[in-house]
Amino acid sequence: MFALPFLRRDMPALKGERVHLRMPQPGDYREWAALRAESRAFLEPWEPLWSPDELGRSAWRQRLSRYREDYANGSASAFFIFDNASGKLIGGITLGNVRRGVSQSGQIGYWIGERFAGRGLMLDALLLVVDFGFETLRLHRIEAACIPGNKRSIRVLEKAGFQREGLLRSFLRINGKWQDHYLYALIAGDRRGVTTKG
Image 1 (cartoon, rainbow, N blue to C red):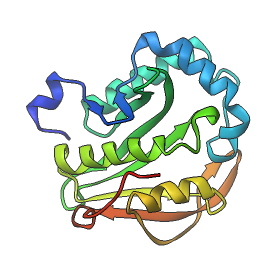
Image 2: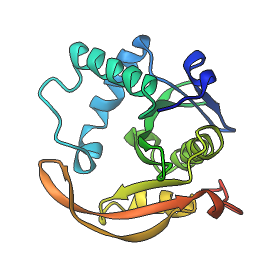
Image 3: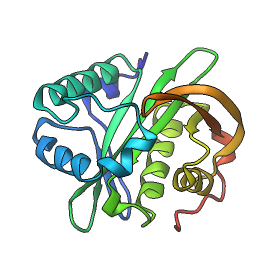
């Protein structure tokens, strides 16, 4: 899908004032597993049901393999988010389900460790990925789906300039049950004047 030769040479790394993003690497396992484990109760209401081996090394290797495969075929770019001040892993964000042709669109999903939430760091990461999607991948439209009760995520999307377009009934199976989601979208021409201030 990504017919751009430079995407095959270099794995993208995105740098902002407070966070930097890069693709997950094998050496990230321990920090990732620890952050996910300590944030489990915080994350589970908004994610697909965790498997029994969710944080195991085998599942980690499968996850990395899928990230590489999705990136190679142009369907997704997965990033880990790191705090510039401490260098610590704070979360993850993916621009996935990339569609070309007449669509030129993709979907964003993200998570953040509980102790890093509420500081505006996810907004910074989201804006970096939006720039990557529009400027590097040349997408026209970026979407995000959000459970109506997820007030934090709604705030992040709206601060990033995303517009709510409607309600997707019984859209995704989250935490073991089918749940409605708001559909948010950002069009390439909509981005003027978006602020990174939390």
